[in-house]
Length: 426
Image (cartoon, rainbow, N blue to C red; front, side):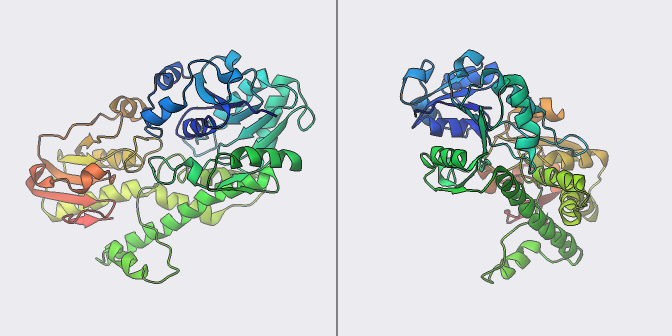
């Protein structure tokens, strides 16, 4: 049977996946953002996950329903009516109280329900708590489509493993977990992914196992980073360089190489809350998971306080001090500003009465303004500052000459531990 694939959600996860599937199957990339669709059909991806050359090589001018392969991007439901595989890759954020927000998933499920036919398969990639696919999403598909689950249509879950900004570990080079709502459907789902994922696949026994595997991957990283962040707080009190300690400890073969830092983004800083909420629904309070989240969420305030303390020790007036923040994206060499914890540092510094200038050559200034009401610039400032904070280790910052940016008496604080001339680092 010839598969025609629709990928719903053309962000950091969906677009690379759709481009990859288009090398083997007729593929439609669907997104409700018309501007995004038009940009992609013109051959450019502003997330920079897919190069213009690679994107243009995959694109076809018309809906590829009668072609063997190729990618066509659309916001029109008519263009996805003849697909038989629907893959949902929309965001799963949390609200201001850190409660899971399934609204994008529910709306995407409604969209699929409008075009679903007998025999079709709906595959979810969005990170969720165990049970969300079959308990929250599938009933929506059933209601809208009028079809019966595991009789008229089927489902699968294959958690995304995209690492934004990583040009080495691209989607096809990362082993993929797959699953299906029945054993036979699991094999079909696995075979579809196996045809394009060169790193191979792992077929989980059921959807809930695949969901759980994904959510603990990032929860484990979150807890490990929280441990190292706590070590940084302890060693800073002892006036010991944390990075020197980690380098020494790392000489043991089984020491895990985690570093302290700000934990943001759409995965590590979010996913543990999904598992925690589901655990609490079962009457269990997850102490370690939530303790790790609390510690990591506190690091923005901690970094700001350390900068201020260092300024005071250097006899630099804090009130009305000018501070330069280098970077606002959630990670290096990537334009993604979702859930960036740099904004926590900026807010805390402004509470001390300082004025913060944000410089990031990777970030979209309009997006930063819209999401966080923060003015940022992609041009190197010309004024001099009382303190400079390296918040994100963009490659442009690694060899930057800070001498022309700092006043004669100034503080250089390195969140990432990559500068040689910093007064302090996290």
